[in-house]
Image 1 (cartoon, helix red, strand yellow):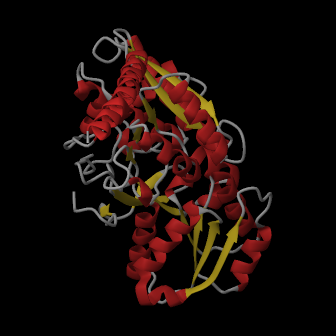
Image 2 (tube, rainbow, N blue to C red):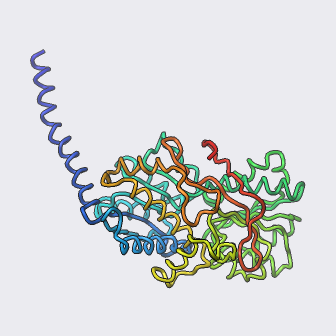
Image 3 (cartoon, rainbow, N blue to C red):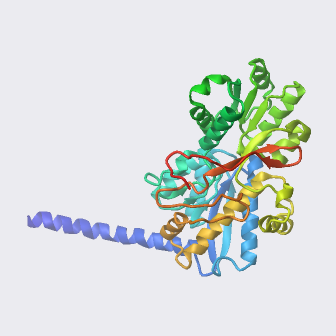
Amino acid sequence: MRTLAKNILLLLLVLMPACFSGAASAREALAAAVTDTEIRIGNVMPYTGPLAAFSTIGRTEAAYFDMINERGGINGRKIKFISYDDSSDAPTALEQTQKLVETDKALLIFGSFGTPGNLAVRPYLNQRKIPQLFLASGDEEWSKPEKFPWTMGWQPAFSAEGRIYANYIQASYPERKIAVLWQNDQFGRDLIRGLQEGLGDWARMIVSDISFEMSDKSIDTQIDLLKDSGAEIVLFDGAPAMAALAIRRMAELDWHPVFLLDNTSASIASALRPAGLENAIGVISTSFLKNAGDPAWKDDPGMKDWSSFMDKYYPDGNKEDGTALFGYAAAETLVQVLRQCGDDLSQENVMRQAASLKDFRGSILLPGIAINTGPDDFRPIEQMRLVQFDGGTWQPIGDMIESAFVGSGNK
């Protein structure tokens, strides 16, 4: 027994320095991430590659933090926003995220774009207890606090948007033939799954279901096949550049089905203008943010601030680009969390405050939409409104629609 006790004691003596070393390393990392004058925030964006149009999100966020810093920062600390390019490649996203954590000593990872890349880095960040906040992706995977307590989404779920379209079709176009054109990845599959779930038995009205690759240069063949199917409604789910190709091709064919466009690609600058604004008249989408070009917001204080922000801090940005609005609103949410943290900017308190947002009404969120989170509710925004393009701006259709996100309660 004395031998066993002696061995245990020796083992403890060996392990204790390692434990203290690990705790010391964690303290050192936090000390580097947060100083008396600085908070280091990491981010990964597709600044190059097929989804580079979405890099506007990161550029807007950088400009927003510049504005916050000029106004004194967060409780006296300036934000150092470090953003790297991953070209929409998941292994690169992991490599860049590791650099942000291990070399740049980021306190948290904020707003990184895309589903594959964020899925790739999620285990790494959760293992190290690094907050992965307000991702630029609508995958339902970001709302699983029981499995991944350090990862939180921000925007409505893609599948919930699909269910909104299903409700709209059932109410406005019953028994009409439906065609679906979708990007062959998780993003595309999620929205289509939501559509099918929402349609229920009416899913039989889907007469054509065709995918395309993100790298495709043309989708003329797919559009021609959809037209031949006799579909009267087309749901498109893909990137803005591909949406522009689809709308333009339908105009060339003089084919005018009801066209439903995913919210992610509902950018006038990146999708509708390249397609030809006259060709996009009547396109239907969803929104949870105010539209900069809508006269209804001409005197809105939040949109006045937005316009002034763009003029001063992001003059090269396009006010017609919905992704700029997205980046502004997401950054505004993170700043609220950091302010709630006060002087306790530990990773644990950052997550605690992110999961404690109560009726936060961002300045450019649509009326009736508020951000609420809790320990078991990691989907900050769950509402969207149907909108239709009139040739100049997006106009609302009907009342606010709650998105019925799977696994959460009403807000």
